[in-house]
Length: 588
Image (cartoon, rainbow, N blue to C red; front, side, top):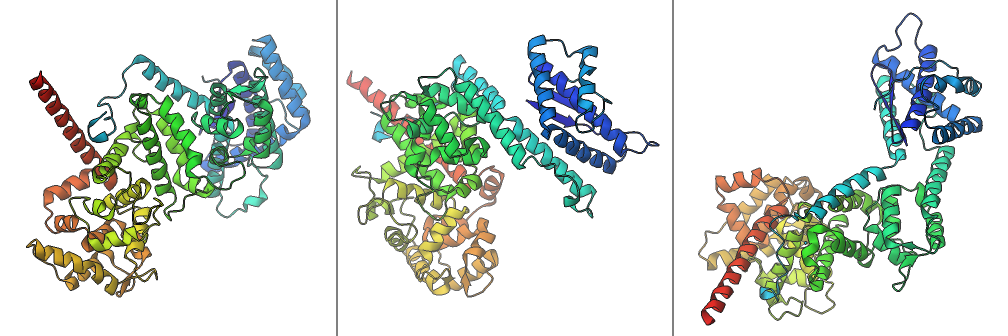
């Protein structure tokens, strides 16, 4: 794998995994660069001149090199030289390197002038276990983390580096030649048919070489290594791919099945996001569903050192996996559909999130989807509301949320399925998935999913407009509650004037989704004013100290809420455990 870096002085430095191959690559690159310098720079000027001359030289270098390397004769020469490096060791070092110049000079008109430079992890109230206060400190966990980072580095292909280099060259050319037609220069992008075919053949060759020792079948461990080292993909995808290509009773995957699947999906030529999408979705499906994600999440649970404390708690393993899946769908598909497209995967950066959780020793730093502390907060909140513990919330259970902060009218709308159709399958009951969507939307009203959730709940007429009549219908119950609590009331007209000043709708008679998204940091105040009395009063009586704390916190509103709530819940569980210990000692 050879990755060239260009310097401002026109020299070319090559970094290579194999030192002998690096010498060869330095020689080839210096040879091309010398020719470009002779052909593009005027004789009266030094080779390294202004930025524009350097851009032209760089483009010319790339064009000439690709033209030369596309010839079959050139490829044969390079293959012969690489074989010489493998067999002869030091044969290409020193003066012997130049022995092949004459042979290359006859291919594509490239001469022998060259320049080279060598650089070298039964609890009270059925709560799940608390996440360890400190990350795993065992030596093998530290070694696991370092090994994962090193393997991810090895998994980064040379093609990605080449694509980044060519994108940089394209941007450099556009800035240096604003008036020149890009089609007038020879193509230098790697996305030609020949280049793609060459890349696919090279990757397929590496795959065949890797699979050669596994004639009877590929075990799961080897499959994970294949995905990591050859494609730079998360090792947890091996669990999903194993489920796709082998039955539950099989311990290995047929090599033939794997190769046929890779050819059918054009796996070698696909981007990393497309590869993730192909591994996750069903063989005959076009979408990623909840069940498609389960093997990956369970794989992370059984292999991540930060979740080792869940090893003997299978029930909470399942609940953790469900919560992570619901959170992924919540963020990646704000419409509430139970399916993800390739576009959703790319836009939501799912691959990046899975790679990060595999590289981190503490899952709690991965706050987007995988934080165990966030799961602990969500599950404990649901369990405390579910008084009969049938894993379903009635309307009376739900209204106890936040110390009865929500109004009856908004609760009715949610149980009618206005914000999102209920998934419990039981009439007038809210399931765990529905609660996850609710609490994420309630505690952070700035995300697209939260804005869509509450907008649909308030939009009584379903015309994509929040009119003053609709807003007044919800605010009337807030006024009645404030009067019952002897709180100072705020007239509806005053509230509307304040909301117009904060949100600034395009039309003074109604609010649209576009208006709310344009002022998403203030839109949550509008919803709190309509149906959350606790947050509405807190906003009206806020003090400068609280405002300063909110501004200094780095993260989302959900992350701030989850952090504070986890500390409170952990302290409550610690106090209950101490009380039980004291009571046990008194009995003795």
